[in-house]
Image 1: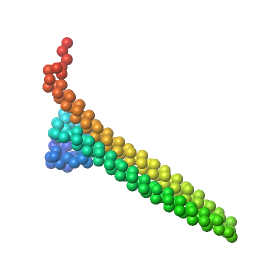
Image 2: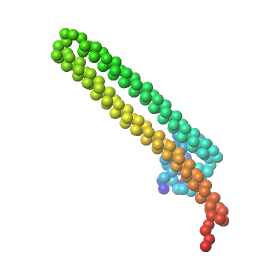
Image 3: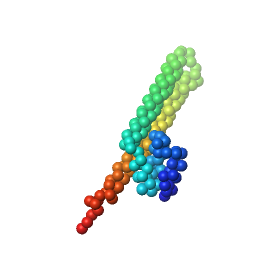
Image 4: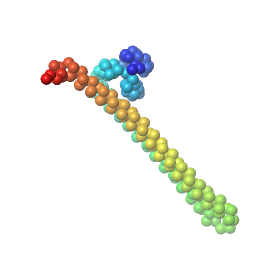
Length: 170
């Protein structure tokens, strides 16, 4: 285990007290959990009286950030598609003019085709961006859920060790 005690974990998070644990640092704490002993992790999590609310707030904050990103991305995509449509409309207008040479017509047609290729390329970039954004949200949500499971599981384990009914007798 990389983190053997609470002091190591506080130092890694850059905090003096668990009261200084922000939502961002809570996510970092969740990511560090595989590198700490179970007992150490449970002792730390038990110090959060409103852990469930804190974890839910962290998930809500991630969802809001994700929705905001998606909204801004959608507006940006719409702007790009409108711009390409306007460019094609201008090129079509130029193409409809009489007395154009073969080279001029060919150039305008190639420009119309190029806008299609560029728009397709932009759409593909957007899909990769959305995929990456979704993965980040899933990782963050998974970390918050892992904290919740560790907290609940730790409480159950601690309670079963404390109670005489927790041991099986044959």
